[in-house]
Amino acid sequence: MIKVTRLNDDELVLNADLIEFVEAIPDTIISLTTGKKIMVQETVDEVIERVASFKNRCGIRTERPDTVDQPERL
Image (cartoon, rainbow, N blue to C red; front, side):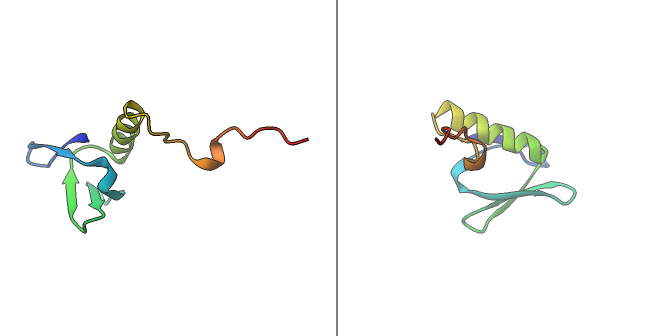
């Protein structure tokens, strides 16, 4: 779960696992897998950081597969 702030200053706790994508046009809009869209004050980068931080606290790996160190091949 991550905390975000709606444009009217109301704080909202959002299930980070439901986030499908985040875009800035120019306000930040979080689109959920349920089809719902939420406009928030945080920037796209702030939302990404909060999701990554939440997943790290839960022990969920957030690295992209192509950035993970690969064992050397002989």
